[in-house]
Image 1 (cartoon, rainbow, N blue to C red):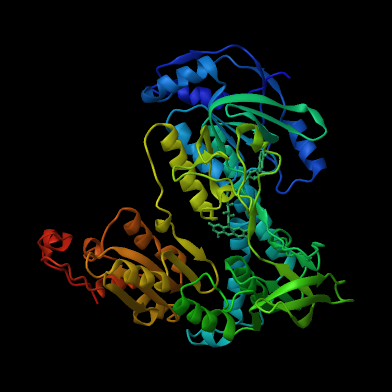
Image 2: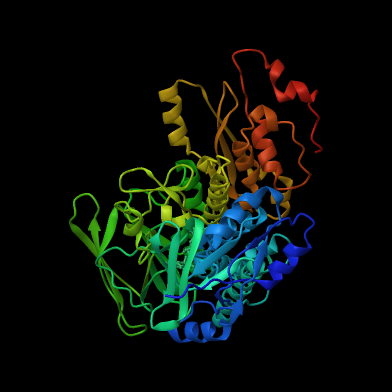
Length: 582
Ligand SMILES: Cc1cc2nc3c(=O)[nH]c(=O)nc-3n(C[C@H](O)[C@H](O)[C@H](O)COP(=O)(O)OP(=O)(O)OC[C@H]3O[C@@H](n4cnc5c(N)ncnc54)[C@H](O)[C@@H]3O)c2cc1C
């Protein structure tokens, strides 16, 4: 089969203009395929064919330049031996983040994308869900007469257009997809369209089913697998996309069922309960664990239950699993859900609802990668095994040379920014600069109203660690009720909690529920990532009045008692404590 590579003239121009461009790697001329057209979101096969037809053109590949002196050796090597320094399979946020960092390091990069640029996050995840949450949150707010009245605002009747709310999400996804694609093109990353599979650990074939004119084979010194995930649907649940559906369908907001059961009370289910109830639907959660929101710190989950569930048309069944779901017909026949006790395995109830959303997690997507050709087997749950440096491990447990896996496909931390951070880490490692990402410093957030966020371990886990390792555990807490900005917004409900070592000041975890909690968590996650202690950040100054003072207050309320005196602490170095303006 002919070998196809892609080439970006924009990148060539920008790299050529770089003062640092030192090397021209003489490479053989070859046929190239280049894609410039914007891919529509969620393409069906007809749309995909049209998009591919629009973007294919044949050009000549002459030379490439390195923008960074220090990468010349690798580029030279790529020029001599491989088409690329790095090929990334999958262009979700993980692949995109890795590509950007690799280009910045002077590498020649191609991404191969089989469906839509931006992957889950941009097209079927973070982005459209946050658009729905933004619109429905506004509606909830304006419908809350008491809240509005308490600030002297009178609102007439509030209505919304379901299709308009849905369009906001689709348009945002489409715009961000375009931004992502343009950012890659501007940096000279070649975008190859097709489903990719390994020939060996330096050679990748790609193509589209039924399209002999699309695809080819490329070689690279290093390869990153960034193929992401798809919704996990437990056995016994047929998805009809209308009355029984996953987040992929729910994001399109094609209709608003009066009563929707959501299987799973993780962050995806919870965010959709926020959207649905704001838009006038009733929700029933079905949760296999004994408590609702099982992933959260228990105290935060209790408050979340009060703020996000109790005052809303939401109820729940815990300790049960949906063993059988029979789809219905909207307005004609309900969906039937058989509930089975998780422990006894006895059928305990049957629910009849208008719709059922399955939010039981995500399964890695590695179909068709031909991992066997590089000696790799996925684990029991389908994840690609990796080392802490994101190197792929073979079935013999040894590192497969030059192959990395990042993002949802490795299952280490299934969030967008984790995928991207792992991509950066993988690139650092392939450049010979050992890098291990501290996953305990990665923040997580649930974008409900109010938001929930956390980083590090829960209080339960911290107590376990303190017992095992024999250190004194500190638990600092503060309330949004003490924050002027939150009170000005009439949003005083919320709390923040920090778990730390009283002997060293090490921060083990921070949990926040309250207004803009997702934005507030970064002070804590950055402190953990950079190994700053409570003493180090205690004297940082926060603008007043801001929500960030919630964290300021939290950190200041922590008490560290190091065994020896504090002469080495940053506090001593920083001098006297400055008072915070009232
Ligand atoms: C409803 C919902 C809301 C979410 N909200 C958030 C949030 O608020 N914040 C957050 O951090 N995370 C959120 N997530 C999770 C987030 O979307 C994922 O963690 C993230 O998208 C993972 O990125 P990735 O790059 O690993 O994979 P993906 O984004 O899934 O991208 C993988 C890409 O690889 C392509 N691909 C697969 N196989 C091949 C192949 N063989 N050849 C070529 N291409 C291939 C796919 O087409 C896809 O485009 C949400 C997810 C959902 C479902």
